[in-house]
Each structure stands twice: as C-alpha cells, then as structure tokens.
Length: 243
Image 1 (cartoon, helix red, strand yellow):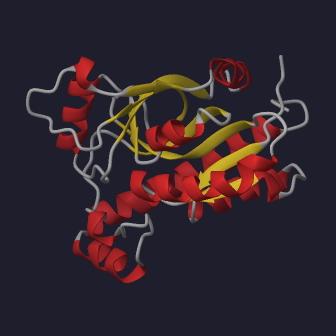
Image 2 (spheres, helix red, strand yellow):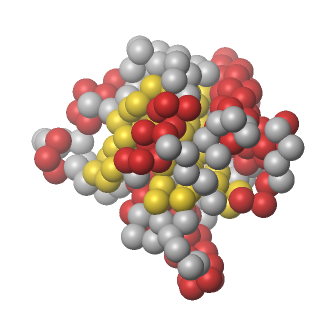
Image 3 (cartoon, helix red, strand yellow):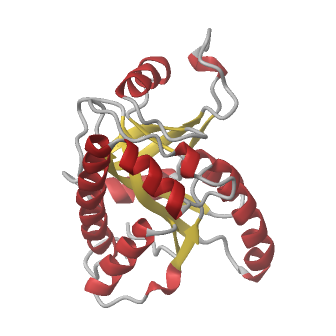
C-alpha cells in the first residue's frame, strides 16, 4: 500500500542540500521540504511556530517523513548504512547514574509509514531503535555507554523532539543514514552549536583544527553519509517507489 508523503523534514545545511539533490535527480521540486534546526531545543521552538502558521490550513493530517544523518551506537551499523526508525527514546535532562530503561521516555514512529519504508528500502534500511540526545556524542566511550544503557542502535539530536511535537498533528516516519561509526572519536562540536541549533562557522573551524585526525574522519563520514542520503531520497520518492 503506497501513501503519499506530503512533507519532508530535514536538518538545515548539508543534509537539506542532499535531500534537495535527491529529489532533483528524479525531477521533483523541493517544495515539500521543511528545513529544521539541529538539536531538541531549536527543533521544538521552530516546529511550535511552524505548526501555528501552517496546521490551520490542513484539511486532513499530512503524511510526513524526517530525513537526515545519525551516529551509530553498534558494530552492526557502519558509515553509509541506512536506518528506519521504529522507536525513538529521549535522554534530554536524564543523568546516566542509576538510569533504568523504564525511566526513559519513548515514542513510536507511524507504523504504516514505517512499514512502507521497510518494504521500499528492503536491504538498504535497517529497522532500528534510536535515542535522541541534547548534545553531540563525540567519543566512542560515550556511544558504547549509550548503547549499553538504552539498547539503541543509533543516536541523533532531533528525532524525539520532532515526534513529540508533531505526532498529534500528522503521521511521521523517519529515515537516517549513519555518518559516524561506534569505534572512533570525533571532534567535540558542542561548543560550536548555538542554543538555536545552528553550527557557528568560526567555532566549528576552531574545533576541527584542534583535532585534525578526528576532523578528517568526520568529514569523510559525513560526505559518505550525505551521498547515501541523496540516493535513499531518490529511491523513496521515485515514481515507482513510495509515492
């Protein structure tokens, strides 16, 4: 059963550009795409205002998908692998000491959209449990700790916040591509991320220069992930695909 996707949410910047290129490659305009900030705070603020402006115009609840990159928490997923979210956990404001799985808020993506995506991306998208974090996990040790505590496969910064604010207004599925694995450290980009969810160029450059080898690894993984994101976008929205 195919269901038309009315809206595409994508984190701003390179991820947004890759999704636009994926649509362009199959002759579709980017008019369905909504660019969102990075991080739970920025996403919540942006989508709250966005819903106030646009939801009154909807006759029926839209079908939507969130696309982007994520980090792997498991050896089963490598850079460039696609994942389809089934469940998203929230770690915002939670300390790791003494945490139990039952203490962690969780939300499910729309089951029909998720099923359609699993069929469409068979072999290119693994059904997963994701965990959303209010900071960028940049060390392998942190990722291992999150995997052990939460039992999740991947980590992002926007998934749970988007689900929480959108799911009472529309049906939402999520597809992401792994851009960093669970084995290696990355530069700490948290100082470069503003409270509004924007990576600031000069602080970003400074953190990258401080850690050149992890920075090179981040750039390589991001480029590979963005290429796969573009291809998956084209596959999902191709005339013979999801639509």
